[in-house]
Image (cartoon, rainbow, N blue to C red; front, side, top):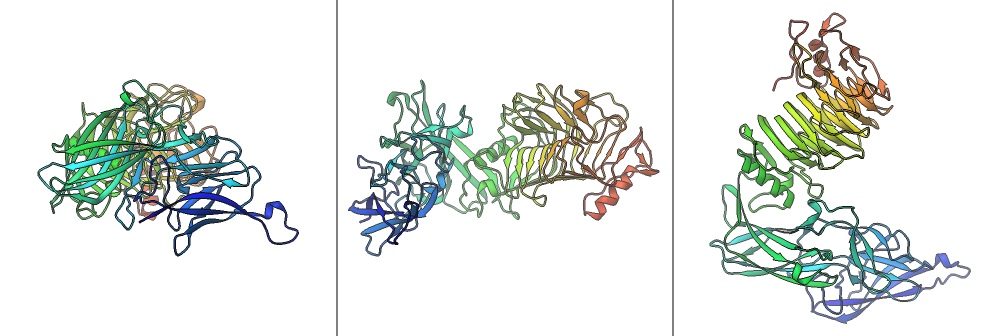
Amino acid sequence: MKKSYLITIILAMCAMAGCSKEEDFVSLNVNTTPYQSGSKTYIDSENYSCWNNGDQVRINNVTRSIVINDDRTNCKLNDIPYNANGYVAFYPASMATDATTLNSSIISNLILPSVQPYATDPMGNQQVPTIMAAYLSSGTGHIRFKNACVALKVNVTNNYSLPLSIGAVTVSDNQAPLSGSFNITGLTDEAPRLIYNSIASDNDSRSVTLAVNNQLQLSVGASATLFVVIPPTQNYSGNKFTIKVAASPVSDEPNTIVYEFSHQQSNEASGCFERNTMVPININLADPAHTMVLNGKGTQVLPYLISTIQDLQSMQQLVAKDYQPMGSAVAFSNAWYSLQNDINASGAALSPIGTAHSNFTGHFNGNNHTISNLTVTSGLFGYVSHNAVIFDLTVNGAAIDANGQSSAGVICAHAVRSTINHCRILGNITFTNLPTSASYIGGIVGDMVAETTSNGMIQNCHCGASITLANAYESTRLGGIAGHLLNSILRNCYTRLNTTSNSTYVLSAANAIIGGIVGRTDASSQVSNCYLGIYDQINGTDQHMADICGDNSTSTLINHCYYPHKLVATGPSDGNLIQGNAKMNLNYIVNGTHLGMLLNNYSDQNQLMTWTTPTSSTQSPELQF
């Protein structure tokens, strides 16, 4: 029988003579009370919590591990500095940041993740990572942890015709936020409640996924219970849950098949779900509401093959769930994908691949194919990170709804420590719904961020599109290739739309700061071996336009870049303009040498793609797509 413990706090007075009060320490003694529960945190009238050795608690802004003695009759948190203002504690420590003030009932930035891992104890019972909170106003007495969350008790029964392996359970709310950053109130009256931190709930925050990752398999007719943790919900009119269970057949299929069983349950009849409640939900896995089939296994040797717009939609949905499917060695978010043919996305409803809560961290090979007539929020890829690679892809024509977000780009909106290689955009590109606050808009990438310049890279890319911002502000930064670079490298790229005359503006945005290649650079970014076409003009406010970089950090290196005579290389800040930069007149001859040869000199030295070297002085050098 597993035991749970009520937590008692006792001051351990310093034994050394002459010690000051600040040198005293607090030790948490945990008195044992027999209680049978398989859950890490069990919700009932007594609010018990079951502790294990090594459980980490955040108390007074320090992290301490639970230590249980051999016979499990006592456990402690040791070496906690004494504080006259009392003690604030949270479990798990990974979900809590530091308390704002120790004698206040408002604590900031508790993170309820959008993807919850499925884990069991040695007895096979699910461990539920719900947020527990405790507050003690003085240095003595009891500190009692209270559950600040709601547990959805999801009972699933397999009435499908095949044995099923459960991949994920996703819970969405049509109005209430279920994940993200929260404040907590009510600690002083021992009734902690999570309050959503953000001004408005976005689509991503209104869902949470339990990633079961095929640790649970159900034969035909079998049932199981799964717990999904959510914050207390508010009393919205028409409030309802949608629960989707993703499952795969228990068999060695050549393709990856995911059945999605959907269930809706109204919350309105219950008003709102208060903290420390358990909500039963019954789901009958009988007729799939949606079946997603991806040819492949998601590895480099057997990537998932993307052949239709439906495949792209399936990819987006599965990456957002972030779990590992049956028969694959990698999660959907970290898998390899390969575009098999051109796709016309006209009329299709697409969401960006990779969300703020479930980044795309895999590889996408466009195989030099084209996605045309794209309509999407933020970009084809939303958030990519952790060495993600997107390469050999063209997008021809796109309508991008920035949705008030801080970054948007046709290929990718926001990239962290990733590589975008050999991508291009063509046709007419429009961006709408930009925020009034600072934003970064790029033809290829909106925002590229890295800790060092070795792990954030945009290279061998081409903006051959006419980009228009429907609304822009002085805080908007627009670049033909990238909106913003932070500690990142952009090299061997070009913005060239017009080939014989300046009949069409390549970049158009009133008020915004515009760069032909980059909107803004920060920290130790580098821009090298790039050019803006001689017939390409930027339509904006004169003092906010530049041929290469619109607005730059003084530590940015701009090296071997070439630009027409119309504007200047850089905008309000000069950056560090080192050797090799040059203006072009109304041709592509620089100091007697064709630009293609100059670009190739740099490319050859850095193992980059080779440029064409036309014989005509007015014909632009190109990368091969």
